Length: 98
Length: 474
Image (tube, rainbow over all chains, first blue to last red; front, side, top):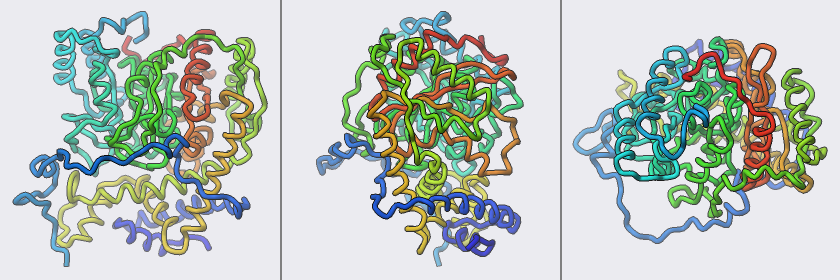
């Protein structure tokens, strides 16, 4: 089923994007075209194929990624807040939630 | 800057000053840099000079794509949503470069969050190709490719998710390497598609790429995907000895959609290798034709998840006049992201949404397995595979901007290496009739960087690419 404007509106909601009417009009046919292009994969029989797990090499999969459970240094409150758009009293302040 | 103009052992302040002056002077034309750190770079160069510290890259000026964190400098990712963000730490590759004595002179322009093949998706304007400023530099690491091509710096870093180092390298006439997945740490690289992203290297000479990879490669506890595989001295592989080497030629990829001049140029590279004693063997990559479709499902799905963190709370831009939290998220992201990033976030959200996961994402990961298997099989009969890097030379700025699918097809030769996790290198092999660079690509098995360096270095010695662009620092 081809993607229409109301599908795009739903997806934009899920993605936390507020789109203008004009953007919806541009994006809907573009995304529909890309989706129909990627649907060429349906030509391939993959019933006996395992999905890939990322780009990991065999050596990468074997690499031990665990570390000792020890307390290490961190950024600290001051540095962590230094780039925040609205820091307040040592916290990230946001608009009201409800 | 070529080898004759510099000496790796005795560079520092003068060389760094040369780079900064060139960057400042040419930026009005090329728009390759988003930040040039004159004071900081000269201070670091002086420190290195005074300390007498002779690291392997002592005093080498280097440009860094603006999605890799350098402490004290900006990291905008070419996006308004990060804008003036200054990360509080260095990426691991930057730590390693600094220890080796390299000096970061500036942050380079790129497509927003590394999404694009032309650099036109930067919130700060496109980078211009130094060979023809009406043409694109390629993308997404276009600023880094241009900075090296124009002789501003000898080396630059980029990131390559689907070809974002190799394709601009090809369009600008420089070398570009995407290493094996897991070769470099990505700690401090702003994530786009985590199963594909790798930090890559631009230079004018293969030897310089090898030197830099020897410094930045290796396991890093901060990145669980970095593999515990020993790092050799990659310059030791530049022996010129191609005895017994076998190069795979995937004939089927030299057909539809490939520009005639690019085809002829890359086929003549095959002849050069034959003259150098390399055995040319036919190989087949039957699933390669599906790579773009697979890529645009996997990359957008991962991007939609990675870019969820940009919400106006902890860093970067926050939209005004949004009195409620969710409204603030939506407005911030609507005003902060450009059209291509929004398009990809939505595509990724769509393919991952309830009921579609199996049809798109799982299917794509299955076809990805087939693409990987194609390579494993091909490498049973050869040491590397040769392809064009890009189907055409640099196209005009604005030419493909309204047709996202046409733009995606630029990556047809490069995305397979990211999907399979194998390394690829782009090497310049001539100019088109319009004097635009053409590049060929070598793709090798996992951890075959020494073989790629050996093969590309031998070509470089046999057919040095000595042409320089009209916009150039020297």
